[in-house]
Length: 216
Image (cartoon, rainbow, N blue to C red; front, side, top):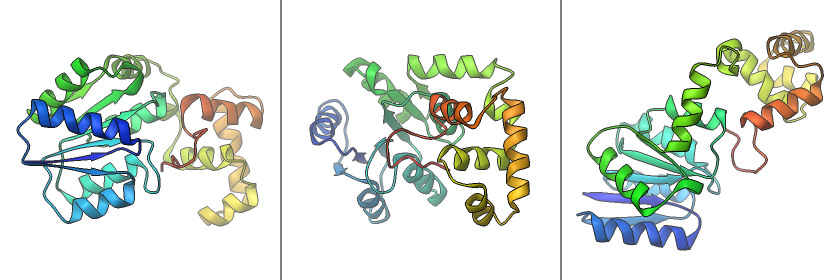
């Protein structure tokens, strides 16, 4: 039974590795500092359990987890992140990832409970994550309930300050269609300006303040 830890902070990576060695019966515990390295390691070995920080260099943690799940192996995944916004929580919860721990609420007790739960094949979400999930589940105006998939793509591109023309070219649609999507998005979200739209996207986590989190 092998484990893979994907974390760019060396101290955190070593602490997680030490916890797994002390409390669980893994044959091998492998470490990676970025998403690209982790993907190569994953392809070369069989891992029963994988812990991934969502905010890592190169291939981001969510994209890495999705690739692993699409590959059909290593399904017992826990992700760690300081991000606990609506968008991140929603994307993780619908991805097939077994566990999600917010770093501000991470303790040894939480880690052990999460790891044991996921190794048993059950879902684990930390308290802060569950709170977000419960709130957006009952919010009729949550972005994912009112926006179409295409509108979500346009919203993310608009929030990155891309022009109508560049968005039109990227999506192979007309600038007029981009403007129509923008108006529909603003009406559905009750936003009055592009500035409000950008602020909304940042607040919800649909686009990130930090680099390396351009999640599709």
